[in-house]
Image 1 (cartoon, rainbow, N blue to C red):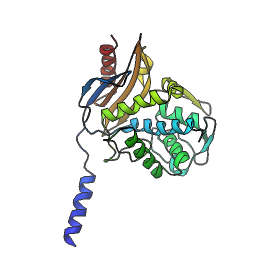
Image 2 (spheres, rainbow, N blue to C red; image 1 turned 120 degrees about the vertical axis):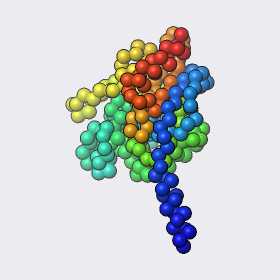
Image 3 (tube, rainbow, N blue to C red; image 1 turned 180 degrees about the vertical axis):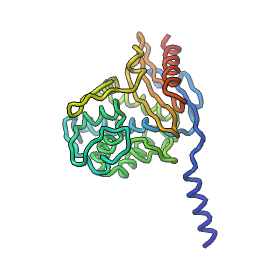
Length: 258
């Protein structure tokens, strides 16, 4: 009995250990080939890059007519209670699917993430099962999701290779929705929300996609860019500041779009 308790104690301890932050970067061409890589298989916390999987499943549901862009979703108490970044949605209020999608892309809203997860699976926990099953089907073999938003869990992990693959497949499989990632502002109930994705707003070749940050993860960014006939997708995970991340992202694109 004592041995069993000791084993359980050790397992619980290990579960709560966060690995040291890793820095990763990757560039992928329009064919899905990796043309630049640094530490791309290191385990990292995805932060709000997690929302790309929430969006992947949302786009899939839209494409199969399980939901519609204009459909109104009811905000649950759990969704309203999510920590920032958020829209400060009120329990019982309504938000359309399109508004929720833009809230994830532009504002990286955690409350809207839970609203979408509950619309697709009734409960965020059941939704994470869909996320993990989809990750396996997409070939994201080193990714494990614990929520729809990317709020920190010690065992919510991925790597730059998996994240890049997911982003690439969103663009490939859902071209009709990919333009939403170019949005830098949207309105909800009369209030204007603007993006903090400075690369998308300031770097002309950029066409999308998503930022992410937690203290444990660092500053993360995925950006797609086009120049002439060249298209690339770049990933940075674990930067020490948003300024350093953004500067390096532009360098990666400039180096590969020549």
